[in-house]
Image (cartoon, rainbow, N blue to C red; front, side):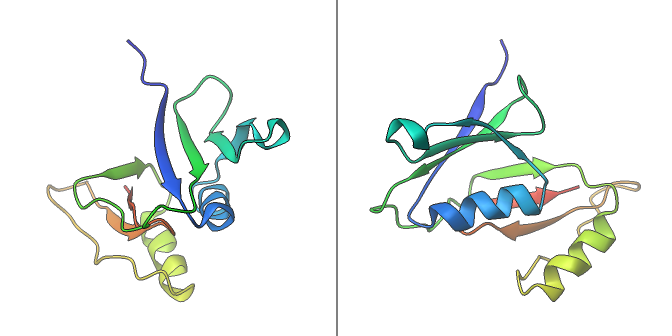
Length: 116
């Protein structure tokens, strides 16, 4: 069974789209805005697992401490430095085992996003 998407409902819709397009470099692969719904699918390419972003004015944007979305970064140190300079408050670098390094940052909806 293939995982299709992860859904994020947010009252910060445009900020959420910008975050996922800019930081992990996802592209819009499905856009329902022209059909009257503020719902967009983003992925690396067509057919891959998507981040589905839904505009929900009633969402609290508090994230979920038990949820995270993970992305591979070519240079995790440089990305962490960049995000820190942009004021996104990444966590300290975590090294659970030799050769594995990652950090987290919250997206505009409060979801933990891991870069490894």
